[in-house]
Length: 214
Ligand code: GRF
Image (cartoon, rainbow, N blue to C red; front, side, top):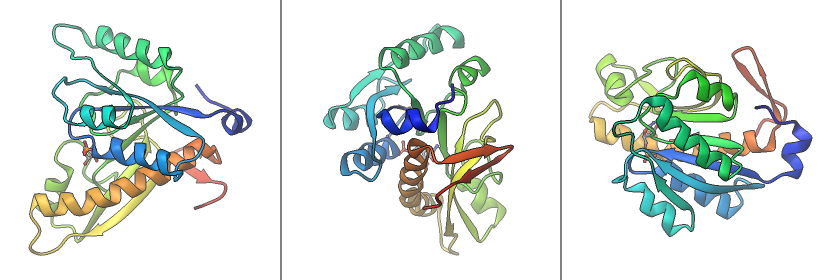
């Protein structure tokens, strides 16, 4: 699904945020919409694949519909069908993955081509997959950060919209480094979503070229 710039400009973009846990990025996005840092957008629904996700309460507190679809005995296709039904009910334009711990199928990605964003706690393409902060510490890099990217069929591999860097300090633990990155994640995700909602970018191969860089 691709939307023209004209369509995006006259239409409030309806966002769904998919989470599995804490939901701090979801709350940062909701608060950025509320404060006007992300104009012309509304967070319509927060979907979790875990009923015990702490972030669901944060969404509900913000007046956002918060729903959990646990996979239980379902196949991936059945589980995604439930999620897609909710996305369609809410006429969702943009899906933000924020600590959502499931891989989306190629069918799902095709349905929302270039309309699914993800945030990852490393400077991709370094350290994709789980425990990116631990991978950075183990590897001994001096700098790491976070990346917001479009989701394609590859793991953490789609076109990059935004990145922020943070130093790795000698006395860092996984916790201290994760906290430093998380602060930047909230800023990077806000900037990336604002850019996509404005629609003033073009995807050229792997590159996301911004027409009016922030
Ligand atoms: C973040 O570090 C994000 O980059 C990663 O999962 C974590 C989610 O944190 N994909 P939160 O649930 O948004 O607080």
